[in-house]
Length: 79
Image (cartoon, rainbow, N blue to C red):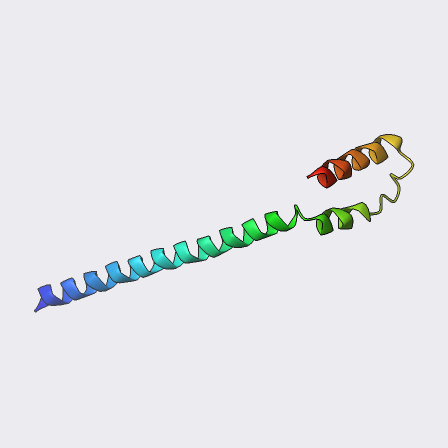
């Protein structure tokens, strides 16, 4: 009788561990899919045009900053 209880409890623990592992894989896969979608969205022209409208308040008078931002935006548009 006690052997049966141990086997049933062990089976329950194994099934629970397996369910948690499968759940973790599913959650991770959906997060990776969301990350890929976000990365793909950054390569769209809309993302670059949004970047083109940023304000460089306080840095706008610095020629090096302006040229670096212009080069960054130009590299993005070329894609």
